[in-house]
Length: 259
Ligand code: NAP
Image (cartoon, rainbow, N blue to C red; front, side, top):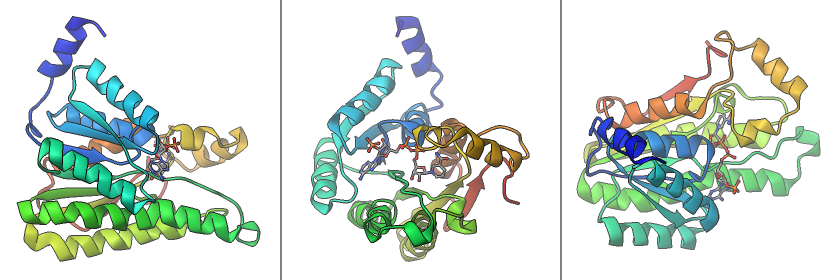
């Protein structure tokens, strides 16, 4: 990264999130990394966490190379101990967590008749129970500070369902219901909680799908392109900047796939 580009990245910051600490789970790559980059580009200190230290380090390095503030912490969102250690370390170093983006997620797709209980449980643990666990721990700090912005990454599948994704649909539907409950319980503490329901976004998660499946999806996207992680990041950024009177919502970012 040249000095000129680094300086440009710093100068282009709107400063809307200056002095704020933004923790994004599963942000070593994909949508999480794009969200961390977008928040950091408004001046936030991005906390990049991922299941492996290497993935977290790589994400944080990418941001720092662009002149943004980023730090890496390992965190497996299915493991309460790991979440507690990570949040403790972040609080010790930065003193607070203003923004939490629950982004980490996985798929284990197959038809209901073939779905192993193991894969059902793994997806529920990783995509839904994790949002409860991380939020519960972070909310203690947000509640004390009387400020917080939580953004949960759900999915259009959690609203509309999908063949071959019973575990994923149930988990993401649960994330939306949990979002509304957090919003109701913590509104009086000045904490907002909203969900983003992305459609088909071009990341490692969807790159592994067969070309014929991608072609099928494309037929249902009026805007005629797959989403980019940045399309999701823009809405997450809005929830954390201009969206102070918005809470308990789930907004679809899907190129018009569902209307
Ligand atoms: P991705 O590229 O696969 O990134 C997900 C990240 O989460 C990876 O870095 C992954 O690490 C990490 N992760 C997985 N399990 C974890 C755990 N237990 N603890 C901590 N980190 C973990 O996927 P993505 O497309 O960016 O997806 C991000 C979120 O958007 C997910 O919640 C997903 O369900 C949601 N979403 C995606 C789409 C889409 O079309 N891409 C659509 C709707 C919703 P490893 O890979 O190293 O395990």
